[in-house]
Length: 151
Image (cartoon, rainbow, N blue to C red; front, side, top):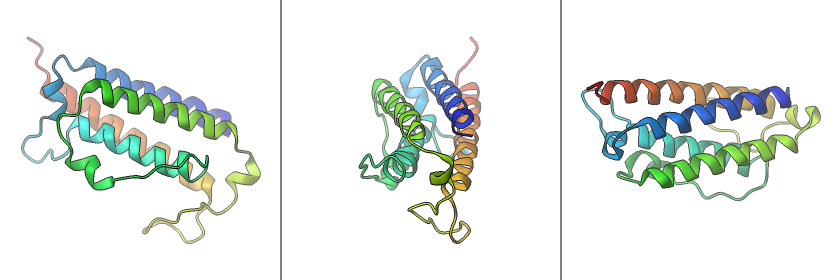
């Protein structure tokens, strides 16, 4: 399961990176309109914080001080900084997963966020985190296609 998760996280984080690179204008990364409250830039910051905390810090013991509120309130972060953060998160996930085995996956995850089953295993949470990544990948992809004109 580790090799499959590694492949999937790498593939889809690379897709997020490609979508962030595909915006022709950095300002478009931060556009919101109507009921779309989260820009692609904020979703990228959120993915970096989420994976750095729940995979890198919790499972890989790579200390990370997360500021979840800032993930959704910061604006106009340079694209280069977003890409660098996403690359670091991708590498951190890959490095951390390489240190895990089935016994570790079946242990209770060190952090038990509200709304999750009691005594949730790391296996369960990694599957959730992969789904979470894809949810936001889809949002970023749609955001780009909605805000970037074909002219």
